[in-house]
View 1: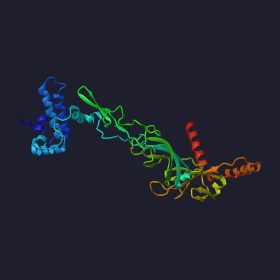
View 2: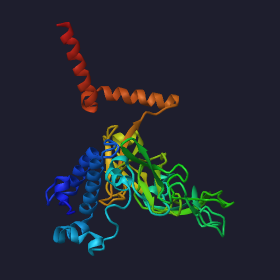
View 3: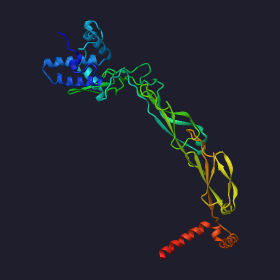
View 4: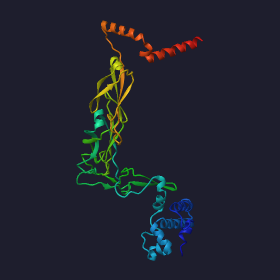
Length: 377
C-alpha cells in the first residue's frame, strides 16, 4: 500500500517552518490520539501516520532526503538506512520532544553538573589606599572540591552509579491525561547518578567548606560601591561543575580631613579673622603631602580655593581631580580681659566707617529697614 505524502498528512506546505510543522503535528496528534478515539483502528492508524510524518520532516537530514527522493530516501526497508523506522518508540518519545519547550523538560545525557555560586566579600579601605591603590590579602569561607573524592562524592575506589529511576537522564516523564510531563527525577534530584558508597570527607556532597586566602589587587582610584571580580574564586560547582566568581565590594572609610566626590576632594580649613582680614599663608594637607595655600586679604567665610590636580585619578580613566578647600573664619574663644578691651576698642574704630568696612552688614541692615518700612506703610 503506497504511503501518503508527509506534507499532505500534516496539512503543511513544503516550505513550512519548524514552528509551523510542530503546530500542525500537535493539532493532528490531538485529533487522532488513541486515548481520545478508543476502539477506533482508523484513528490509531492516522495517529501513527502523523507521527511518522513528523519524525521525518522534523529532522533536517531526513527532510532533505525526503524532499529529494521521497519515501525511498527515508525508508530503511527501501535501502535508505536512516536509523530507526517510524514505528519505533512510543507516543511519549516524540510527543515529549514536541512539548518539551512548554513544560521545561529536556533530555540529559550523563550526570548533570551545576555551576558554583558567586560570592561577595566586603572590603573596607582607607581613603589613602583607595586613591593610591594597594594589594590586600583576604580570607573567604567557601565551598571547595573535596580532595578525598575529587568532587565525585563517592568513596575513593568507587564511582557514582546510574540512577535506575531515570536511567541517567536526570528527568522522568509522567503521564497526565493526554499530556506527557517531564520532571526532575525525585531519586537523583536531576543528577542522573546516585552515590551508593559516599565519601567520608564530604559525605557524598563532593564539596567541603574551607577558608581560603586570596590576594586582591585594588586598582588606584576605586570608590564606594566599586566591585572587583575574581573569576573562578567563588564556590566550587556540584558534580564537577565550574566554580562561581568572587565579587569584592569596596567600602571606603570616613576620613578625618577629606571628603570625596567623584574625582574631587573637599576639606574645611579654619582661619582666624586676622588672617581673613589681612591675608596670609598657611599649610594645608593633600594626599601627596603638604602645600601652601595663600589667603588673600578680606577673605570671607565660605570662600572655596581650588588646588588643581590634588584630587583623585578615576579608576576608569580621565583627568586627575582637584582639592577644594573651603575656609571658615573662626570666632576667637576664651578671651582674656585685655583681649576683650582691644576688641572693644577695635569695634569703636570700625563703627566710624561701618559702610566701608562691613559692606555685607550694611546691605543687610538696609534691607531690614526697608522691610519694616513697608510693613508700617
